[in-house]
Image 1 (cartoon, chains in turn purple, yellow):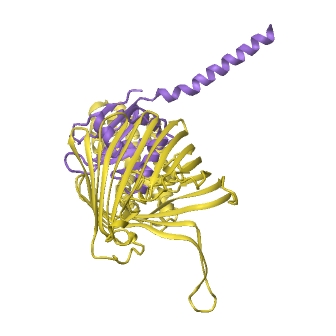
Image 2 (tube, chains in turn red, purple):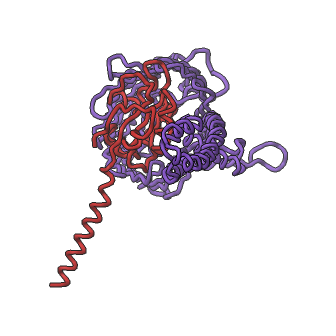
Length: 149
Length: 443
């Protein structure tokens, strides 16, 4: 009886550990941000068009400067799933493919989220996505979309 | 300047000084610069956390933060005489700290400009990228050995001159080329194998979303696979049968392209081009006076996850690669994705007219490809038909199944099996398989 109880306890711990490990993937609230001086009306549809390289100019005629997070960043996975309905890996492959095909339109920079916040706050034509808590700390940013998980 | 700006400036200043003292000048190769920039960015993030922590620990009253002058006046007006003595000591200490921060801020302001300058320099420097693949191929045919093949090593050189002008080139080394001259001063070749091929070399002028120009050599904008064929990003090493046989592989000429949103969320992409036409000798001269022209249109609809429907037209009145035939080709293509399921299909047909009308013939080809992707895996099937000359027997049908495993976004393992069958009774069915490793060498 004792050995069975111990075994069950062991499995319970394993289960809890697995649950804990999987939890952070769903924990991050991501937001799409632009510079506070950006006066465009930016809808989720327009954001999807930008991140699928269909749109590369703002309505003002200014070229869009687009920021992505590194592929291994959980925020990238959340963003790609929610907006493009594909994995972060697939979305990065798409950018690489557009680059070698010479059909890429947008200027894409891959930066960690803190730098995305900084750069978007500096460049009027920039767009990026970052965790909500970073966006709240950074001045000169405008949140244009909350990403539902 | 506010304290947050000081922090930011300080971080950038410190980062740049680290960079400057590390001995890497901007004359180093681009990959070293990029690596250094990545280190700098990481360092910035670390330093930002550190500075915020230090500021908290310094217990600096919030009223002292703005400037040295504000700091003195505000403190003097708010504290009583006894506290003033104590606070004056604190002010002296804090003033020294602020002085240091101000000094660093000045340096950091310079650092910001230097950082921007360096970033621009990196952006405008020539970038090298590429891909490579290795195959293991076998077939059911008697007497054909299974073999390793170092199929592609392609290098891309690109340069962004400014916001509007870009250079792009691709040099392909196929089957590990080897050229060896005779050691007798004759200049003759003793040995040659493989292929070195400049597949693309062009300049772009990107004026707007609607209007762009390209001049040079580029892949023919026709259907899907003609441009979208790079091994790390397509599911099979073997291309569909009709690709490059109905529309030419390359165009040496000029292209006008762009995209317009004619109805909200409905895009039309166009590419029109004019070039020398397909010829056995290209890159230097046109073998005839007529020019080939073409047009490709793509309609992108907001249906499913991705949806593209398009057509291609191509005309060459003197096709040097087909005995000066008058060639007209057209085709349709469709690609859509719904969640993990992608369908891609192309149809193309060419009419060739010769001086002797008895020689006229048509070529026709089409394929449909179904791909299911889950996690890092891709599974698929393709049905493929090609008729080179409709006046002769020789329609080839191919069934292909394939599997992909993406180790990451740049590295893919592939397995594919193809079975060909022909209408001619004398020709037996033929099957072959390829296992391959493909890697994208870019960022």
